[in-house]
Image 1: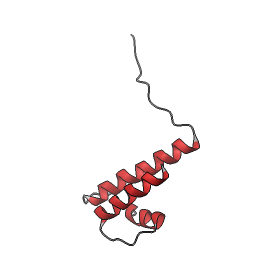
Image 2 (image 1 turned 60 degrees about the vertical axis):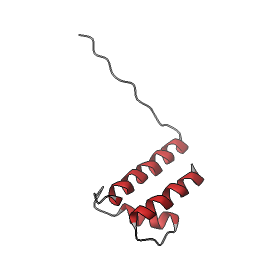
Image 3 (image 1 turned 180 degrees about the vertical axis):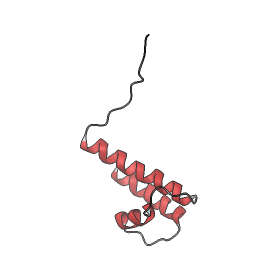
Image 4 (image 1 turned 135 degrees about the vertical axis):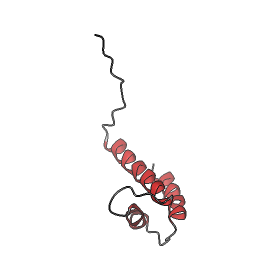
Length: 73
């Protein structure tokens, strides 16, 4: 029996790991913006603290976070 395994991407640098983490936060915030929950806590709250935003609108916060990501990635 011949079994093949798909090869995936390995992120093994500190910069790559941080980029993956920031992008996973982006997609969790996208879920919250459409009314779904990613986890028990609020991702939006963490994002507000991270980027220093005061907005309560999650769609506007997502836009701000995407702009912020463009400056750090």
